Image (cartoon, rainbow over all chains, first blue to last red):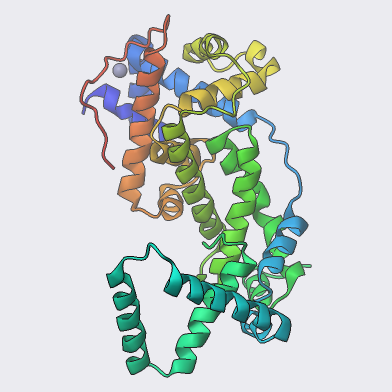
Length: 148
Length: 206
Ligand SMILES: [Zn+2]
C-alpha cells in the first residue's frame, strides 16, 4: 500500500504502533501528506473549538408541534367537532363544485375521476373512503396547506 | 425528571406536550451543532432545528423505542440539511457568509500550515471556522455530512452510517472522498500549494 493511502487509516486511528511510527516518518518527508494532514487537523480543530451559541427552542417547538395536531387520535376527534366539520363540508362542496365546473377541465379527467370513485365504491365501504379523504383534508387545513 | 427517551416518546404519543419539549431539550444541542456545521451561521439553521423536530414529531409513530433516539433524530436532521445544501447549490446563494471571498481565501491559506492552529487563529476562531465551512461548502453535501459526523463530531463509522442511512463501508468511502476533495478544493484557490495533483476524473458517484 502506498504511504499516501495510509493517511485515511492514520486519521481513522486504524494503524498499529509500528505502522503509525512509519507513517509519521513518511509525513516528515512527504509534503503532500503533511499538508493534507495539517489541513484536515486545522479544519477539524477550528470547527470543534468554535463556540456555537444556541437558544433553547424546546418549548416553542413542542407548542408548535401540538398546535398542528394534538395527537393522531385527537385528529379524528377534532374532525368531528361541529364547527370544523361544517367548515370542511363547505370547503369540500366548493372544491367538488370547482372540480366539476372548472371550464378548462379536459374531458377525460372527469372520466378518470368517476372511474376512480366507482372503483373505490366497489372495493371499500363508502364511510371509510370518506374518513380517509376527509382526514387528509383536515390535515391539509391544519397544516396550512404545508403537507409533509 | 429522569425519564428514558422511550418513556418520553411514549408520553408524547399520548398527547403530553411537556414530554416532547423535554425530548427536544435533550437533543436540540446535538441537532443544532450538526445543522450549524452543515449549514453555517444563518437563519436556515434555526429553521433546520425546528423542522427536524416537527418532522420527528409527525413520524414518531414510526420510531421504534428499542433503538436509541439520538441517531434517529440526527438522521432526520442530516437529511434535511443535505436537502437544503442541494437547493442552495442550485440557487448559488451563500447566505451564511459575512466574509468576502478574498478574506476567506486568506484565512484558508493558514490551514495548510503544519503544527496545528496557532494562537493567532484561536483569537479569530469564528472567522476561521467560517472559512472552514466555506471550504466544506464546496463539497458534495453527502461527503460533507459524513466528514462532519466522523471527523468533527468524532462518531464511529457505524453511527455515521446509521445517521446517513447507508452502510459502514459507504460511510467510510464518503469520508475518504471528503478528505481528498478538501485538499483539491483548497489547491484550487489562488496562492495555495498543497502538492495535491488534481485528478481530472475523480468524479464521485456515491
Ligand atoms: Zn505521502
